[in-house]
Each structure stands twice: as C-alpha cells, then as structure tokens.
Image (cartoon, rainbow, N blue to C red; front, top):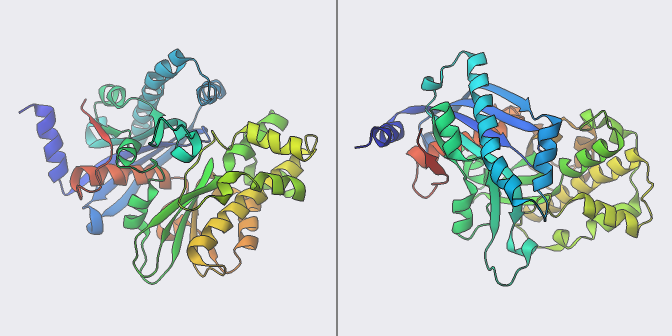
Length: 386
C-alpha cells in the first residue's frame, strides 16, 4: 500500500487527532488559525483549543482578493491567486506552529476552508440553464499539503452543493456536536461579513441554519471609504455617534432577499457597495454622514437577524443566542440586537468554552475530524496527501 494512504488510514483509527483549522471569511481581513485536539467523534467528540491566532492580510493582498470577488474578473488572476492563497496560508501555518513550539510532524491534519470568491445559489444567479447551486473557494489543498508536509482537507462546501445544498452554512454540522444543550433553545449567531446562525431546538429536533443578510461586509466598506486610516469600526464607536435614517433603512430592507423564505444563503456578491449605493440614490442619501450610514447599516443587520430568529423561535423568543465573529466585538450592534430581541439572552460563545474569534476555524477542524473518523453521512472535503 502507498505509505501515504497507510498513514491516512492510521489517522482515521487514532483515538485523537491534532488538527489545524483555517478560516478566512468574506470580510477578507485575515486568516484564523486554530490548533485543536479532537478526541473521539460524533456524540463522543471532545475538542480542546490548544492555540489560536488571527494573522491579518496585508492591505494590498486584501485588495487583490476583493478585485477577483466581482462579476467580471481576469481569469488569470483567479488562477494565480488560487495557488497564492494556499502558499501564503501554508507559510502562515508554519510560522504559527514555530511560534507555538509545535513541529509540523506533530500535527495530523490541516482543515482549510479556503477563500470564498463567489457564492451563487439558484435564487441569486437565476440562470435557467443552470438548475443547481454553485460556490467557489480558492486556496488549493495540494499546495497546502506539499508545503507544510501535513495531510490536508479542503474545499468542504462542494459535497454539500453536489447533494443539492447551497454550500452554506456548513456550521450546523459542527454546531450540533459542540453546542447542543438539551432543554435550551440555542441560536449560534456568527456575525462575519455575512450574518448567519444555527438553530438548535430545545426538544432535540434537527439543527436548522440560515444566512440572514449583511453584517461586517458593508460596515467595513463604509469605514474604508470614509476613514482611510481605519479598516473597520472598532467596538462600533463610529456607528454609536450616528442616527438611523429610516428612509434608507426601509429601502435597504426592501431588497427581495429579505422577503424570501428560510433557509437561504447569500454573500457580498448580493450585498455589495452597489446595493448600498443604489439604495442611497433612491432615498437621496448619497451625502449622508458616515456615522449615520454606519448606524443605519447596524440597524439593518440587527433587524434582519431578528426577523430570521423570530421565524424559527416565535415573536418573543426565550433562547440563548451565542455570538461569534468580528461583530461580537461591536457594542453598538450588540445593543441593537438586544433591542430587537429583548426576551433572548445574548451571550458570547465563550460561555460554551469556544472563543468567539476562533469558532469558525474550530468548526472546520471538527468537520475534518468527522470526515476522517466519524459518520460517513458527514463526509465533507477533499483530501490532499503531502
């Protein structure tokens, strides 16, 4: 037998695995690196976060990624960045491991989400000749495996699409294992570039998940546009100085996405600067002060999350909402959510021993663990050997 395949089988049979989860979301701010010890699988799974780091992308690299996340792109740029993202991520992994005093040979698996550059569910592409959903993440797994010497699982979303799903959200598969609490309705709310959540019913019913709309993707865009020395609104300080513009908020909420049934997925392809600019043009708010614009976008995110939460939980939800992602640090956004969902308890995922910044990277480590050792029904990702 090929020695690499023999090693792969041995990994699947080990009682525990050390897995590095890698996540970079639609905000394009950097790479989350989580070194996890995963023991067991499925209902017996125990996850210990050994080390975590977020390594920011340079401004020039962020701009290159934004440039290819557009309807019209240079195909050569996509091809080159497919390899470049992986090579940069491999270098980041090796640097983090060196800083943590962990040799690459002591890591069993890399689990890489990759970088989403386009998400195209049917309701979004509306192309009659294509009856399926589609999504694309770049950052080739073979490059990662070869450059780090570590077995790599990547491209997790394609199996979900192949099975008729939209490729997102994938979080429910791992949220079920990490956060289920009998007798408690829980929403696992991730406030990344796009807001999404997993609903775990108190009665043990199946996990349900949906995207709700934009979160940091538009907020960060406005900050970059109006405050060249900043890349995001730290703590929601700028938004807190503004006032919600009711007319602009109504125009933003009139987008057909918010009238669609649940579950649904979306991305910055839909909730782009063009969407915002069009809504401002309709409401004569193109000169709206930046703090007012940020305050209105915060209200948009909170209103959309509340609409989705109330769909699953009822109008007066008595639930724990465990929050993760960059938006978990935006006090103005959290206050808006509390206003819209006054009967829910808003908490950090840290309550369940999962740091909010590390949650998404941990989830992909869990998905890789389940693919290797768990239920064959939860088999996501392509395997690249070193």
